[in-house]
Image (cartoon, rainbow, N blue to C red; front, side, top):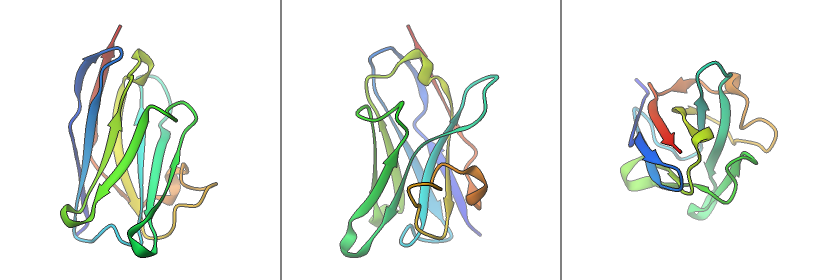
Length: 130
């Protein structure tokens, strides 16, 4: 059974950093699009970024405009874990963060579409204070 487990959330002040982890069990990340989403109170869930492993161990990664240059997605295939490094955090980054997966390439126009994802983690809370 596929399971995704997020960790690493917490409370930080604006300008700080956090690294979220998404550990997978039941399958490997090879050939799978892994996305990060977030949902703030009273708002719809939105895509933060996504990554897909390509041949030779490289990856294609996408980011929402709101986090480009501040957030970085990386992965450790040996640990079957994907990370979301979040720097220069802002209060508006406060949200519940989720990782999700589906078995195909992410695609520039579909990585942020929630309905493409088959598996979701339980979420981890990130709170950024001003």
